[in-house]
Image 1 (tube, rainbow, N blue to C red):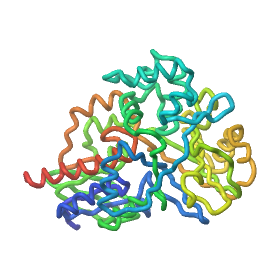
Image 2 (image 1 turned 180 degrees about the vertical axis):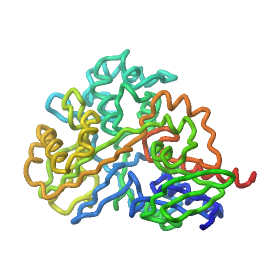
Image 3 (image 1 turned 90 degrees about the vertical axis):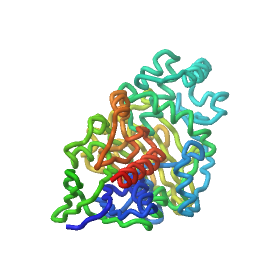
Length: 410
């Protein structure tokens, strides 16, 4: 049995930030990761010259202060601006201007009355209820051609279940899509930089966490004791590991997500690098990403990389389906939007996330006010709760600060 100051379970961005912050403060930290690589939902797969981001796709210049501070601290370079528009599909056309000031003039899929209603809606405070309830008083387009396609495509949410407050906060804080950036060498760049600063045990799944004065971590036949532990994993996983998880953790549900990455022998034409597809236009595909437009290094010269994100309604029955069935379903659904996808597919990758992004229900938001972690703490985007990597980074910093305060008091 070994002993450390702090055990961190999970080597996604939240766990790595927690460990990095604790190590910087002089704590003895060990990170345990079930996968054979770091990154979690910010993993990048490198195959045949393609860089395939499994989860997170971009980082805004605005609204991500903790992320940019970390980038500066670690000396990470190569975070170029994407410089391509985001579009909404409507009536047979990709309409540019989503998340951009020009969208208020061009519409970006919204009717004139809906644009005015959207401005009124986001100015209302406080925001309560679900996304569907937030949109209900306004023009139907506010739900059909903005709220639903954004929350379903980006977060995997059902607008009738997920809380409106985190969505509106993200909508108003990220700034224009013209300032959105990506990591030149893959979205796992920051995680790989953090990995080099901490001790990580890969391919080391944790089976159980218990706490009685000290924390005991059981991983296979190995046991580790620690003064504190931080569960930097999705809330449902945390509950399966630690039987005494607080009520807020148990109420923090997740939505599954499913993505198909298509490696092409050509580059489909598109001005936008991301096209959101409303459910009223197509029930199977929520987002079409032209990854080769995000940065030239995402695909070999003359080749294309297109990612299809499934509509949440079709994800559950496809989670356990064979890859070929998943590709066939989504490729067929996307054909009306990108006809050239029907030919030239030289390979594909299917990414399944059973715990894709935190659902952020009104119930979880209400319980968060009384959340008081102790020897076993938590980190992840669900703790904020807000479905973005900035929330994961912020939660890691805060979890580390709580652990250090308890250490000082102890």
